[in-house]
Image (cartoon, rainbow, N blue to C red; front, side):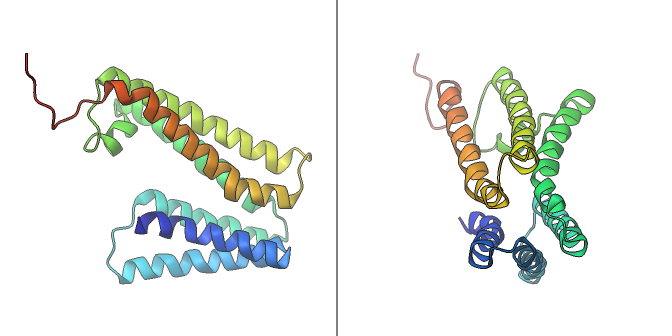
Length: 186
């Protein structure tokens, strides 16, 4: 639970500061500062920081700094697209070239599934992340949506879509889950 709070805290403050100031540059400065402080705090606490969080935070710092310095929101709007496309490409490369299923690697200790289901999940999440990156690009750059709409979409839309997709995946795989606490009585 603490990890979830740590993960959503910066984007929540970004959302609140944007809505309070109506200024993407102030909100971005606050986001970058919070991400830096968050990494320092986690390192001082000797908490293990996962690579995805570090990469995402570094990308926020780089894209956020570019946004503020160039006075162009393009960079901060592009960050989710890069992250989600990066997830998809990493999962695809791991699977195709290294025969590693990243969904399996992350979840196999918590859920037992047949290998075919793991493979289907991996492909499904690759497609999902590509779709999410395209959707963010559409909302951010199509010209059909305001900056405020993108901020709301980034904060609530992407999170809602992600949670809904994960829940649907769970419903689809539940019949395949092998419960380690069940005994075979044949």
